Length: 218
Image (tube, rainbow, N blue to C red):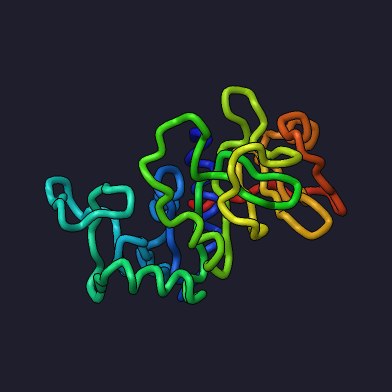
């Protein structure tokens, strides 16, 4: 099981029946692969659909039915499509239960940077700022380090996506909960020690109790 699969399987455990969920492009889209077909969870994409699904069969991709990243998707019976104004009204109006987003950095205040790296071409900020500000719950799904450098750091050095504190960070090494007091280490991945998580993090991690072991969706 690779690190992205570990992250996606753990995030899947955070979603519950009746949730309206937005999955960011890249790693977060994998989360849907680890939910049972009768999970009762609806997926929204900011380009204007509720009820999106994976393609039911190869060869059915169409240019008129894609996710926000332009990848082809399917639609479940009862799905609905609408314009961007309605889509962002749902997001900004607080009607989205959960958003799962990738991340470049998360700091000790629980703030997220995930939309640009200065000096590199940015195709657009997408809906990340609205999603972090508007969703009821924000889960960051990202690798713990990038080329050996920590992504859980003291203070974000990249431009912030929002000043809001995210609700949960899931990496291949740990599950971390940002709080007013700081970053709380809740769980470590199977076979990963607390010392290894601490060594891979620049930020200070709080441990009010012994961290549990990460579960993963089947």
